[in-house]
Length: 201
Ligand SMILES: [Zn+2]
Ligand SMILES: [Zn+2]
Image (cartoon, rainbow, N blue to C red):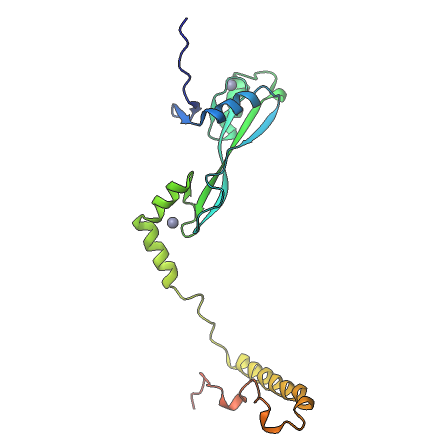
């Protein structure tokens, strides 16, 4: 019997048909190896980059869930459980063996939800128009405009400023004795000189 070339991937049962998830041979070997152990296991794939490129952060996502018995993968735990209850582990669900395959990915900091499996994919994304526009939009926006002060708050701020100015003068006073003109001025302008936004009189 001629040996069939092994497909370099996992069969994924998507629910609307099967597809092949391309994976490196070493990863497939790891999956076969882990599948020999009973129970639930997690396999974390190598990260796309040793250091996330600027503008990206590393983020894990569940790539698939593999049935240890038949090595068929499912996109989420629910269809896997249904498959195992119906077929591979029928009647012995407590012994279900599965591998959760975790893929460290890169998420764009500017575009939450945009994930990439490789640094090259991320770089391509940073050249895309939608990303460039979003970054320009984020950069052009001033960080949260300051809340306009109410009159009451302004009074409090003025008092605090005055107290702080007095405190600064008081604490500096002993050292300034004899120094005279070298003394630094108050660190806060007196309240009267503050530009008052509410000056409506
Ligand atoms: Zn199975
Ligand atoms: Zn982006």
